[in-house]
Image 1 (spheres, rainbow, N blue to C red):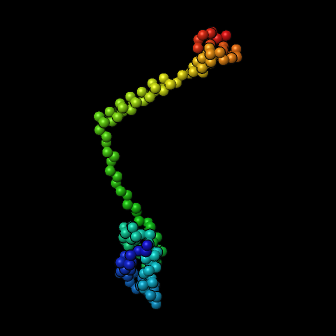
Image 2 (image 1 turned 135 degrees about the vertical axis):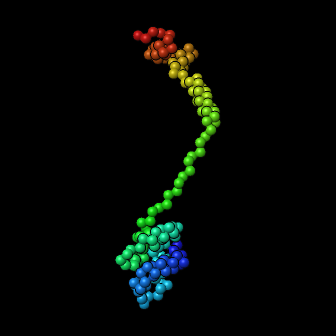
Image 3 (image 1 turned 120 degrees about the vertical axis):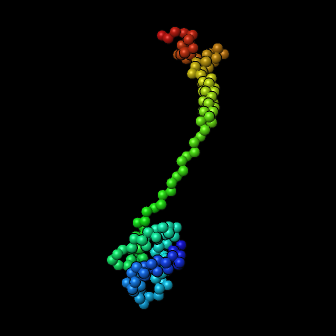
Length: 155
């Protein structure tokens, strides 16, 4: 979207006052509407940054009137506006403490449940149950499960 025509007219008024005939004489013999349309297109990146246009007008070169591209270059040097951020809201200490207690108790409960489900000797118990039901196991399997379950001393 090009720069609004009102803005371009205001820029031309300001540059005409600052540089007089030197500014307007650049386009002698050309339709001024086309010249302004070119400026509007060249400055379209500043539609949402009017402060950059104001910066450009406040910082015009002293030597000669700027072209649209030169004026755009000055506008690009405008400082960006930084917004001050509000501080983060603080949580109530009692609410934080309560939530931490809930998390800790849930973690502890989960840990106990997981520990109950975790049986590092399950393999040995399965082998023993299979052996007791008459399944044939190798001597090594029998020795391993008996050693793991404490039924036999390790060799």
